[in-house]
Image 1: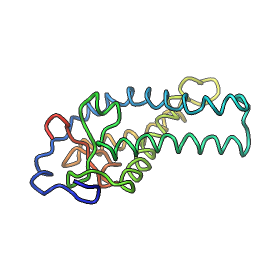
Image 2: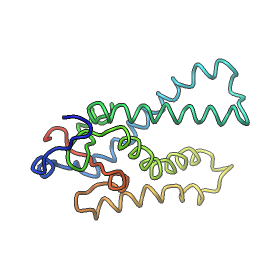
Image 3: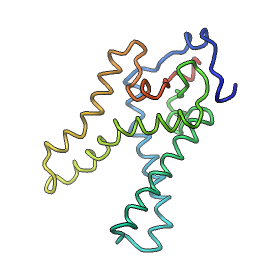
Image 4: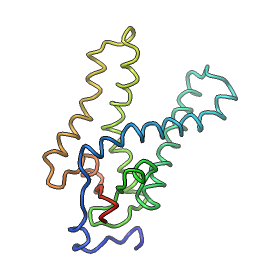
Amino acid sequence: MTDTQSASPSVAATLVTPSIKRRLATLPYEGLLVLALIVIAAFPVSGLKGATLSGVPHLLFQAYLFCVTAAYFTWFWRHGGQTLAMKTWRFRVVSTGGGELNFATALTRFICALLFYGPACVGTVLFFFPDRVNPVITMWAFLPLAATILWARHDSDRQFLHDRMAGTRLVDAKRA
């Protein structure tokens, strides 16, 4: 099956969605893998200038890390539908019809997921600096994540909001 083809309707109807708890349990593992990826990607750049980047070089460095992270997710989602954490927890991402993702869909899913998980990642980091940031502001960072979890609890297929927005769905790889 190619990227542009989707599975037949009967295949899409037999796809089983993993539980919300199981999908949320993968987040710390995926976060550690992404942290390792960022550390490895930052290593060559940090040797050039040290940790004193500011201004335009700092923005370019952040854009570089964004591109590395986007490449990680889109490549894995395009080649088998599973990141390393998803392989461990045995689920994968497919199109709404059950087919493989094309590049545009994988990138859309990454950007949509970033809207919900990105603020929570920032809030997690800010949580460790209570003397510099008001804890109430830190808690506001978790609202988008809470919104997508609440959405999944009431969604007919138990899909997160970013999957609905991108036209994708998570399925149980054991049963697919």
